[in-house]
Length: 270
DNA sequence: CGCACCCCCTGCCGGC
DNA sequence: TGCCGGCAGGGGGTGC
Image 1 (tube, helix red, strand yellow):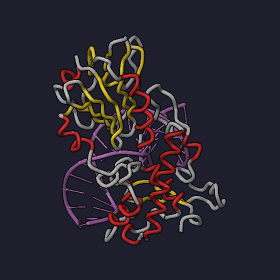
Image 2: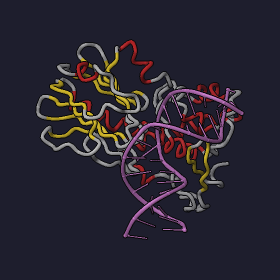
Image 3: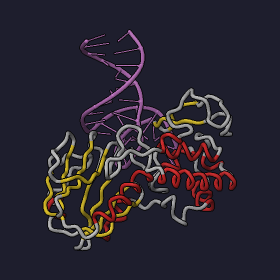
Image 4: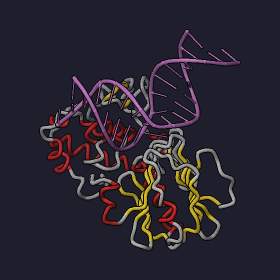
């Protein structure tokens, strides 16, 4: 579910609301996440003051006043919302973090594919991965071109490989390739420098526009204040099989690449 | 090495 | 109407 723009929206929303707040108590209602919550998870948070909150790839990272980091990954259906502490518990509210000021940070996840951990700062990179952030200066056409050399996998799979590029998921990989005019099945190793330039530029544009819209809400995604995003209204190909291309009216095609649903315009994407 | 296929889990939707 | 298979924005593992 949540990709870079959605996680960014949550992080930016939470940061000013969490800085300096203290964790009073942590209620773990369901520790059986994709990776079971560590036994000491609640103890690692209780009593701590929260500092900076930011996004790294698709992960949320909150600094703690003991130097450790609280890392949250929302998987497919995870939500991370700030509510009044008195609000009743809802289905799939797995972890409730009670803060001073009678507010609660609630981790809700229907499918329980999310993850949560408190880690030493030195272990942060291993927890969140080492991929290049597609909005960072290091994500350049030269980087993409060099990274894709001699690789037979599809360009779409490459863009979604979090070990290389951290933050793009199925929606934004499809959308970025549409705007770059590149078919998702193209072999990465056969991209030209010009293709790489277009893909990097389109990726940055799409992500920036999506962040400005508060992300895409297909069904589950809500931001930290339970608001929906609106970028789904701007999708050109994602989940639009058979519908006319917004640019040339050719019907959008759907296919499966590496097990993930994929979409492209056979006319605009050469 | 890359991918097809399996798993994790629940909910929803369309077809019969 | 009701059941069942397929599919869903995530990642990780196996074997070919």
